[in-house]
Length: 485
Ligand code: BG6
Image (tube, rainbow, N blue to C red; front, side, top):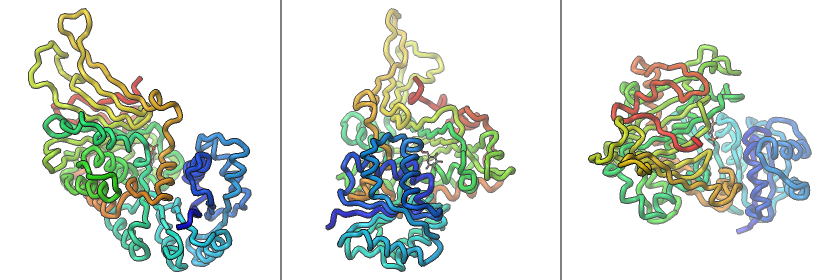
């Protein structure tokens, strides 16, 4: 198999390409992790020259990607970049691309087609590539990377999967969820399955509940057009939050192979108790930040939720009766992504703990961002007292342990995996569909009189006060350890 690889980026003039893909490819290049013989062909609607593409990519490297490049490194990387303008709706674009590829490729070259475009072009592009015979793996492998959102409901996700499978095999499809490329997210399985201390207590006998928070400080910024249709549930829950839940809840696999991992994930999602449309008020909360309707390209009377919280139950032996609380929102107090494993409280108190007992159960925090690491909260004796206790933390921090630049951007890892054919961190067709199957009734319920109220919350807060309602009487509050200091 040839080591020569051509990356074709559809939508190369867009934000994703400039903010994430080019910086990630550049970093892989300087780390010599990319095939020695590679080309990057950008293709998008704007009529840029090759030089425009190189210059603008260079500018955004530092500005958007936060990457500093020496002139020598940049120049040698830029020599691999070319750009063509093309209309994705026109069949001739694909024929033209084929000709351009033929001009640079070596016999047996591999191709990665990265669809960094709005989702309405996905089918068009796949069809164009198929009709010009660019997906056949006769002479080197062909892989297609598809960004989210993968469909907007179960029906559209199924239709998209079906169209993909008509022209290529599942092993050629890489559905990206960039959360899986984060080191701290991959560390969830390492923490669980490379240690012996957690697994015996990782179940309903010791765990009281699980909280997953993905909060952002930013609003919708320039993405009003997309976001107003999607909302927080499609944007964050159907993919990132459910992925995090599966990593916490899945059973150990016998190996770290893509299909073994994906099989277990699918089992978890299948075991989540569906929330029926007429139960959404009990299990979900929704909110919109004040000022959202004045954002560019957002309908002035928009009812789109920018915050949601949900309670899920998993019907299997390990998790029966353990609630999983998920919440995510924009314009919140802080950017923080954290998983809190809340352990049960002691069966009998012999020490005079705080009267309401809040905040004194043991917690394990998997801190995904910003202070990436893990924290264990437990009770310790306050010195000089008879038997007073206080919660203290035992901390592991990636940056302290592995150095300030030890965490590569998620896209680096994901692009590397596409080029080596490692599919563990990509979502298989059945998982995308099962996730939609869970999400669809919730969104439908939100369109009925059973819907919870759409509460308006102030920017810079933790969302509607209502979200504490979900936690029920025996829970104190949403916990936070990550990013607090
Ligand atoms: C994207 C969503 O998938 O994830 C965005 O579309 C969101 O709305 C982003 O801002 C959050 O990612 P991260 O890595 O910054 O937590």
